[in-house]
Image (tube, rainbow, N blue to C red; front, side):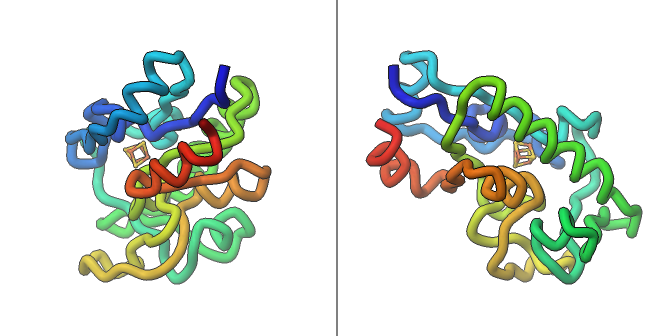
Length: 160
Ligand code: SF4
């Protein structure tokens, strides 16, 4: 069997995003992975006990790696510090990936957890910046390759 892939639950159609919505990816490669029993779905934020819906959160002055190193915080739009919950979310995702043997992940871009190419800049004004979320940073630090939804074909080229 091909490699297992850790996948953002919202990308699998689960309505777990902060706004109560899903963001399903309809792609034949994803359908094939599912049929082959290779998809391991998780919403890191839900796994850490966050509710649906919840306030939007952004990383202040930094990226996921800085959050892991204690150099940046994750805050909700009302200013509430949710850094610890986002760290727990990342640890849960890493634990599941290791337990199930996932060496690859397909995660939604832009999220303060799952982003891999861009995140938002912490001002809650819709401004993007290059960077990765907290879960992505922890997965990458542990040798798991993270791709975003639009990179699914590149992922299929390496994962089968
Ligand atoms: Fe989707 Fe990841 Fe956000 Fe959960 S944490 S809603 S899986 S982007």
